[in-house]
Picture 1 (cartoon, rainbow, N blue to C red):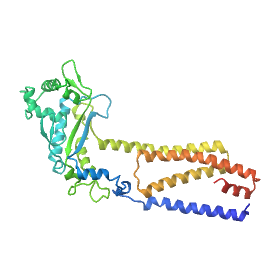
Picture 2 (cartoon, one colour; picture 1 turned 180 degrees about the vertical axis):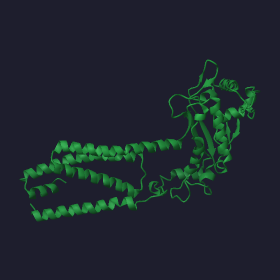
Picture 3 (tube, rainbow, N blue to C red; picture 1 turned 120 degrees about the vertical axis):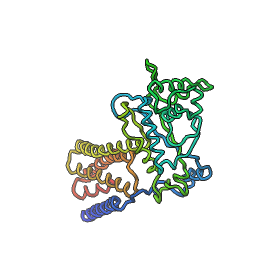
Picture 4 (cartoon, rainbow, N blue to C red; picture 1 turned 90 degrees about the vertical axis):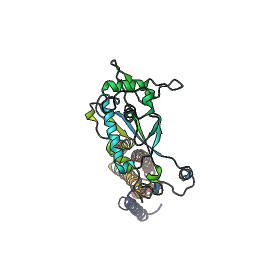
Length: 365
């Protein structure tokens, strides 16, 4: 067995090495990458990874979908997305988007089946009803609509138009307009209620993030990312609709991403709670403050290394990355149990004196 001086020297060198490595890893919080660049997580240059980019280069998409979802608002109770005030508010927001030149210039015209003509911008049930009631669509003649325009319509006029639209059947017997909305119900007075429908626009991929586009999908960050453009649409659409008298709201996919971010932020405190619970479990198992302190320090070191490595990589906070510390804590506790149990066994078998304890430390690694 090595003498005590040599074993102590090894212990101090080991602690020094751990301190240096820990300092280097934790330096990621100060020196790690930051900013909009996403290049570190794209494996650029890999032929398999770049297959999608090559496919887009040879067969570029004609447009990019811009989806919005009209559904239940944040308050209690259901709302009617087919109420006349809701439809009028939606077309006002559509017009606001289309009058904003910096936003509308990226939309392209495309044929829309609900009005059987070309449209531009976000398009859903509200825009369809307005175009048909204003007799600007071939569908107006198909349903024989001769009533007032959208701005002058009453609830009874809206009910009549919706009834005619929902009665339209395709060749296979389906009712496409009725299937477009979710939770469609006809009330006793003949009016219609629905829980949700979607709004869909078509954007130009060339003007958004093409070679000469205003925005970019490139991870380098040399141009603003195109979510900035989508957020400009959300700023108009995703406002409260309390003035309509209905519990209705327009949700975007970026808003759903924000909800995920909120969930991530709510998950992070669980890491601290889990750490405390793990230390309590260690205390119940070891019942020696020195062993508990050593194991807790090891768990803390493990968390520091994980977060520091993440900072060096510049990896963004996600639900997966926020749950990873809890998983590592569970694995770290298991390692602590086995490691300290083996150290105790080796130290006792060797006599329990200082040199035995130091040698057992090496033997338990």
